[in-house]
Image (cartoon, rainbow, N blue to C red; front, top):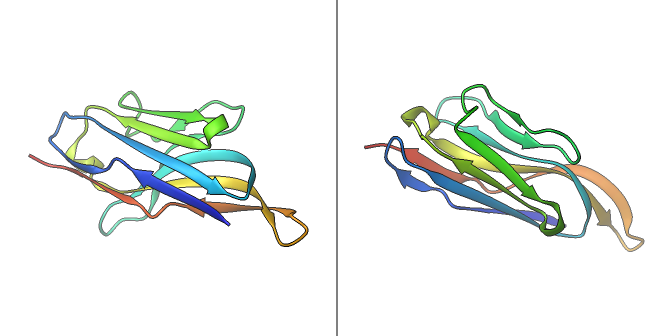
Length: 125
C-alpha cells in the first residue's frame, strides 16, 4: 500500500559528502514524521534525523552540524545531505515515514510506520 524507495548511497572518502533521497508512494493520505535511521554492523538501529510535519527537525548528537534533513511535503520526499563524513558514519541508512494511508475497498484511513529497503553508506579511504 505504501512504498519508500531510497537512493544515493555509496562509497566516499572521509571528509566527503553524500546526499540520500527517499520517495514515498502509494495510497497515501498524509505523512506525519519522515526521517532517517542507520544501522552499523553489530549495532542497533539508531535515529539520525527526523522531520516532523509542522515541527522542528531533530538530529542525533553525532551528526549535528554535519547532516541536514530536508523534506518536500508536496512530493512526499525526504533527503539527507551528509557532509564531513567520518568512518563511523558507515552504516546502512533507512528512510522511515509515519504514514496515514487508505486501506480496503472503502478506503479506510489507517496509520503506520513504513521503512525503505536501506542504502549502504561506506566512508573509507
